[in-house]
Length: 524
Image (cartoon, rainbow, N blue to C red):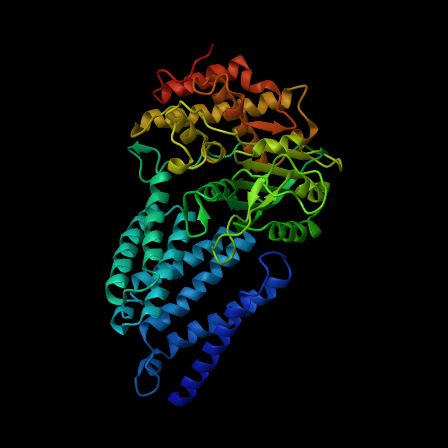
């Protein structure tokens, strides 16, 4: 029996309106809590799955102009929303499968030219939809390390923005041109080493496995809060280069037979102190026993206001700047976040990583509740006379060492250009050996703090700690850093003096030689 076109159109319109209503409702859901949102997401997925299947099965009727006149950009818009759903579900669950599904839908839009007829529609709002689709697709490709796609998308996005400019002379033209420039700068800043003889970019350093200790106390990293709040920073959209690198550092591929899952991620771009507290409170409320929370702060140093406080009080001596801009992107009064702000969340295993000129204030953070606590802190400044590229060129060096220690050392040694495959593979093997050596010597150290020891039972945190010590060792040997304590990383509680171990120093010097260093590293 043939379908009744009128009923098909009515059912399609009903499902379309319902799906749009559910999608809009997702914006009102908090970006935290792990219970309330899940049912709503499932219902939204269900209606979009039905809608997608329905438009496929009834495409002939729906595309008929006498009945409805479904356009290809309308199909593309549905596919784009499904891609967004998968992406946001990935952010909440940290399951890379959903990120891959998001890529599949975004890629189909481009491969099937769903948005091609938007140009013919001569509609600025539709062109904006297409531009936003490209921006979202870029982020997904970056997270999947599909740089081949990103370069193509950058070229296409550049042409689209120029066409948008020529056709509509829009008021937001400069904003979209800025998006294109930001993406170009982002890719350039993260393209630091080319290895001759391998396809694509060098792969991330594999994690050092942690051997399970029967009946021993252990922790597991379950939540990571990533805060980006530097006034001047390399970024694309609301994804800063530093947060992107830490995001990839904790996005470890989990083997099929592993029961361990990646920690849940909470990305906060220019948050206020209130938003940060709400997120931390919601996480801590449901944190399981033995579960650890990591807060990563990339921010400027807080500057105390010149006007006196309204009431007499003890003004904090150091902190980090938060909320340098308000939600409307206009200027607002900066707020500070201080070690004391985070104390309520240290009743459970808590790690703070700070990349900021104001990081040293966290050396004063007290362990007042007896739970494991660790602060890994960046140098306060870079060596002033060194030729090492700064944050505006390659991002923050401290974060780069945590993300990709081999490439970070390459940058520190002022190397650029290409590296031969054989040398790179030898360097990779050497740095893997170095990380294992650091781990072994830390665990054997008699003065290893119990907090550090406990955090080393988690694979991700253990690797953060060993990479921190590797950076300490490089700073100890590097001629540009010597004699400048403000250029060295710090930890609270302090690390054992592994970075000055002669066996480790010898291995690091051998690695520097493999990378072509002739003058920076000096064991004296």
